[in-house]
Image (cartoon, rainbow, N blue to C red; front, side):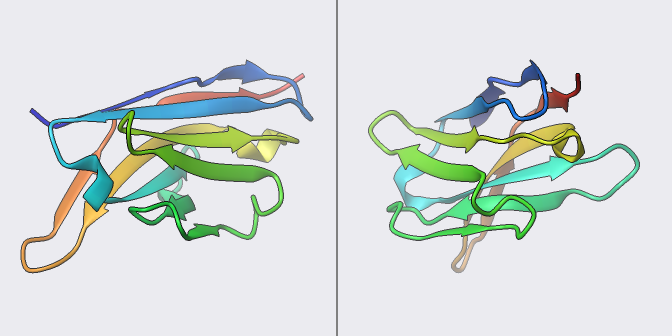
Length: 119
């Protein structure tokens, strides 16, 4: 059974930090590109950060560059999102995605974790 379980969300003051985790099971984690998305109320889901299967390459949305860092531990089947210098506009539901291309593409999603940045 495939599972992606996010954790680490919560309420934080502007300028603060949070570290999100996404624990994967039920599939070969090390072969999947992992991506964090977020969704603001009433808006479409947007890409935040992505990391290749080996962790050798990362990509970020312009809005989070220099503040967020994506990483992964293939031994623990976990991907992380370190979020620093948080802003109120970072408030959103954050989702973990696993993607593998090829002849039979696969996409898996977690249930999301809420991040609220407010004083």
